[in-house]
Amino acid sequence: MSLNKNAASTRVITNVKEIVERNIEAAVGAPFIATGVPRILEKTSGEVWDEGPGTNFSLNQTSIYTSREATSKITGTLTRIVQDETNVLSADIRRVTFRLNYTLFGRAQSYEMTTIRAMDR
Image 1: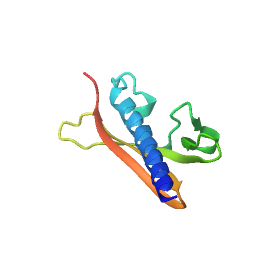
Image 2: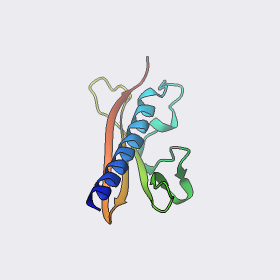
Image 3: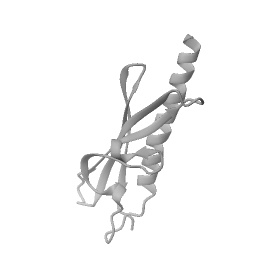
Image 4: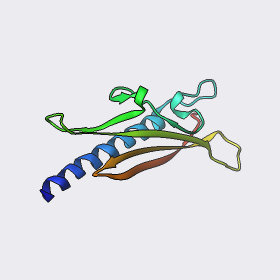
């Protein structure tokens, strides 16, 4: 029983990390020019982020894990925070954070990653 619980926990944590990393990579790879800021890099103090397929945006839930028999499902809330990063050149540099909050075995969990993104030249 303990081994099954540990294996399930590992699968969930792996999926959580993949979701957050995928969104960080999307923010780093998005074209960022003066004439057009992509939505993923628009400034926000924190909003629920709809990353697309697998997200039930009406419920603000991102699917993290579904068992093979579809008897167990874990969802979470993915939040995006984009803020100005102060610098001596007054360049448009943004700090981008994605945080995924979820519950696993009755305990609240959270995983987040942050990156810094400067405007393309």
